[in-house]
Image 1 (cartoon, rainbow, N blue to C red):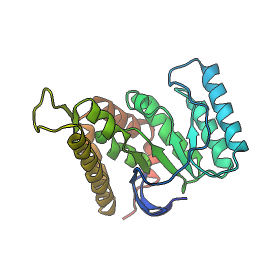
Image 2 (image 1 turned 90 degrees about the vertical axis):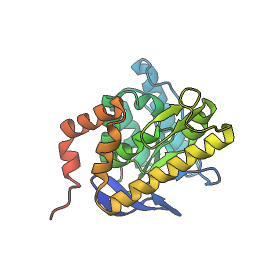
Image 3 (image 1 turned 30 degrees about the vertical axis):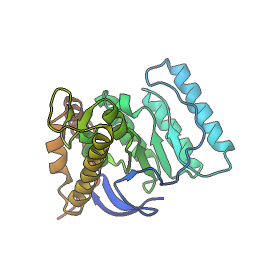
Length: 243
């Protein structure tokens, strides 16, 4: 369960066990994912529905507490159903399935995250396991609390250096001469910096400025921010401070 200490818009600064959120799940931090039924993002609705139903049944049968996975593919109603049913079971941490695909689908990304956030316990934590670093400020702004560092290893394997605003293929942009381990460490340092940067911006009530700056570096992120502002203005207003 997340203990919320401060809001800046829908973003939350809080405590999750020993982590200060927004935070990164790193190797060595123990967590268990409750058995789910994985399914690709773009599948016929009947398959996505079957995945959701099996995931819910597995969670009901589970005797251990852990992270529930919110399936449903590209179908908003199924995502909401999965989130609400897992929430009823007392699950307090939710992993959003298909994160890589969602970052390339701005409408779906915003619809799914906002509606999940609105339909589960406000003290429940949302976990985005694979993420491009320049998306993290926007995701945190929408209420995502936890992030994975799997993308750091993945991009290092592809010879891609991650910065707060862009990804660089170091075979084309020879900014640094880094081997795989050095590149992986660089990417993880970038991720740590961005997380700390977000935390400090929440403290200073300036996260929206950071979001505007980083979204400019990605067409998908900028589209998602515009959709968020236009379609979910009431969601954002709920967390605006009164002066």
